[in-house]
Image 1 (cartoon, rainbow, N blue to C red):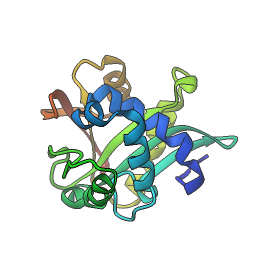
Image 2 (image 1 turned 135 degrees about the horizontal axis):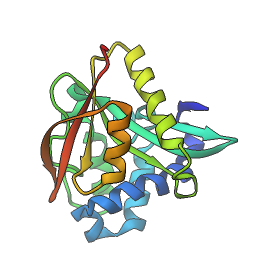
Image 3 (image 1 turned 120 degrees about the horizontal axis):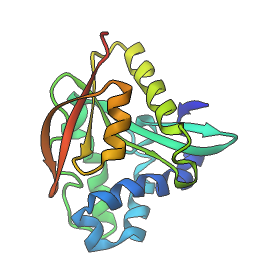
Length: 188
């Protein structure tokens, strides 16, 4: 079942989300560690308007188990999407004023920020099924372009995205990693 995340999903969402953070090799994670950042992100789940707040997370739920997550938002929200986190970071003694400093979405896009499948459910078609459902949900909202970024070396993910209909339209850096920027035309 595909649905919006609920508060009680937090403990299932965090490990799936941290798969992505670990791949990104974020400087803040290196400084403060996964345990402290998990506390911060978990607290952020409950903040309206935050990138990883429940309102921006869709989950694929199988028999009460979160097997895949999708985090996304319209590009026009990107500049303020992490502001709710700054107070939480400072409360936990982390002096960072931004979790992500790089622009990830292009104007006019609905940006698929994070997409991951729980390790025990990978390679079973769940990711493809979830991605197809997300495309339909975003299309139904009236959005025109769905976008995402994928590490240039992540061939399995790029294969899934291309198979779903995404096309590479450019590249950009997020932190120190180079990503392919891909778009899906929702008007077709």
